[in-house]
Length: 160
Image (cartoon, rainbow, N blue to C red; front, side, top):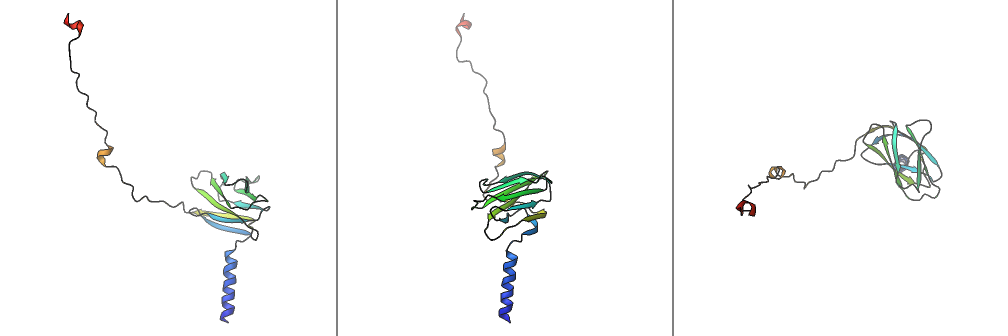
C-alpha cells in the first residue's frame, strides 16, 4: 500500500513539474520564466498589457514577431536548427519593468500557449555594503583665494 502511494506521489510530482502545452501563469518579474519549445513549432505568448518592445537574445536560435491581430500577443518560434537556450525580454507600454523569459529548446516538451494573466514583483534590489557616503566637507565647494596683485617693479613708462 505504501509503495503504491509513493509511486502515485512521484508520478503526480513529475507531471506537475513538466510544463503544460496550454498554460496560464501569474508572472513574477523578479525571476525569469522558462518556456519550452520544440524546434519548428510555434508558440503564442499573451501578456496582460500592450507590448511595446521585444528582444530575443540570439536571433539565430529563435524568432519573435508581434501578432497581427492584437498587441497583447507575441508569436515565438525556434529555428529548425536551434540547440541552445536563449532569452526573450519584453516591455509593455507605459511600464519601466520587463518580462524576462528563458527560451529552452526541448525535444520532449513544447508549450503552445503561455498566457500571463497578471504580473507582480520586480527585480531584486542589490545593496552595496561598502558604499561610503562622502563626508560633508568633501561635498562643499572648494574656496579659491586670489591675492591682490603686487607691484614688483616700475615700468619704464612710469619712470619718465
